[in-house]
Amino acid sequence: MAAMRTLHTAPASFIVTPAPHLVSPTPTPRAGALPAKAPPAAAATIQSHARPPLSPRVGRRRPCARAASSGAGAVVASVEDAKRDVLIALSQIIDPDFGTDIVSCGFIKDLEISETLEEVSFRVELTTPACPVKDMFEEKANEVVAALPWVKKVNVTMSAQPAQPVYAGDLPEGLKKISNIIAVSSCKGGVGKSTVAVNLAYTLAGMGARVGIFDADVFGPSLPNMVSPVNRLLVVNPESKSILPTEYLGVKLVSFGFAGQGRAIMRGPMVSGVINQLLTTTDWGELDYLVIDMPPGTGDIHLTLCQVAPLTAAVIVTTPQKLAFIDVAKGVRMFSKLKVPCVAVVENMCYFDADEKRYYPFGKGSGTQVVQQFGIPNLFDLPIRTTLSSSGDTGIPEVVSDPQGDVAKIFQNLGVCVVQQCAKIRQQVSTAVSYDRSIRAIRVKVPDSDEEFFLHPATVRRNDRSAQSVDEWTGEQKVQYGDVPEDIEPEEIRPMGNYAVSITWPDGFSQIAPYDQLDMLERLVDVPLPATAAVASS
Image (cartoon, rainbow, N blue to C red; front, side, top):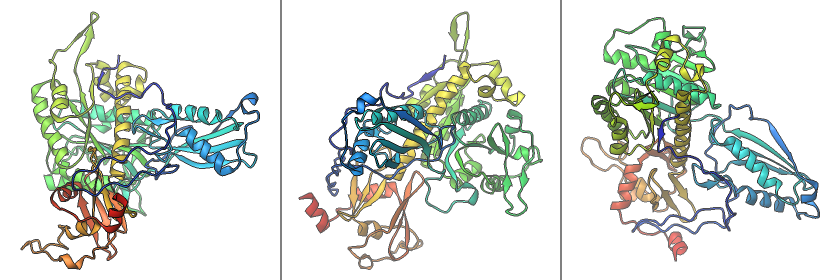
């Protein structure tokens, strides 16, 4: 039986009664902040935060013919009326992760109505090809549209957007087509971190995603023993000078152990350079998930990885012993300081079953303590199994050799958790900061917060703390109050990972605005209301 605690499961039904409008009420702003504008009457299309497909369903249309009797005598006046009917019908389908209908999420693309106003075609663009409810979405989309009295045929295509990071900064070429980077960390050796990383990666691949594994342990690489690729040496492309990863069962692999050097004997700065080179110069191609098997500890290598790679989330691996918790706690604090969300804890070697009883030879509590102390929402218990241990020596991951076993079911639940949490994080980050031109204010809703507030663009620009605006030695303000026009507007706002946004201004200046700084600005600065906002709020 899959041992799992507190995993948020999808609701039994994805159908709700259509609401009078498709947009949830605007959150109440904090005291002193600009008031939010009234929500629009309808939201037929919203910018999607989704990504690309690697599923047998991609590019395939699934027709659904209507019964002749249900459509008798029912007509619509125009194509626009027909599209509105379809969108209203589809808005009954709720994404269980976001709690919003799939129309408002921007999942509906390429909606077409035939000239006879009898056939409907559209594409459902999901957040990930590994979406655990994609079959349910396809079934319900066919069902609700086919229920319209004038529809005789429905063609639904399931897809997702091309892989791309949510990070807006300058990324190394090899990382520009990777949607999510997952760190699997324990900060302590011998707890089964590599086993979890490899089995998680192959679980995600089994769910339909494009996956890569990066073994970041130069001193003791584990990946060469845990998988069995035919080509066990990394190759350098002579033209691009990029590293070509090896592959095993469709998952791309990079490890210092595949570099023909065995285990490294070198000092810290050299190790960081090797890690940087292996990660950033590899031609990973398009990946939905890159799983990084982090080395033990919280030193230079970890900081290098967190600075070079825009980590989406982290999975923490521990064992029941108290000593393991002490080391894991250091790692969780490190990720917290680096603004990397920890989405799950895996407690390895937790129990074994015998004589129809469950035994906990090392006691209980390490994983639960991590969850309770740091607020990590999901905990998974892995049993003591000889097959799980031996899979690290045979070169065949447990989820591959026994895909229907109890251990595979636990990893399946972990994979669903990672997919759901990464989608939520990307959605929160992509919509955290935006510019509302109707009231000429920057809207801020910091991830993991229900509060929303508004800031004047001029105030944000004047409070930039970079070296271009403030003298690093004297603290003297280079950009004076009067240097920034009161009516300045940002040209572009893009997310910078999980901690900040990049704001481009008309003068060409690119400002990095951390969420913490924006939050502090809202609390400390009493911003006068722009005339347009005052009218909107009156």
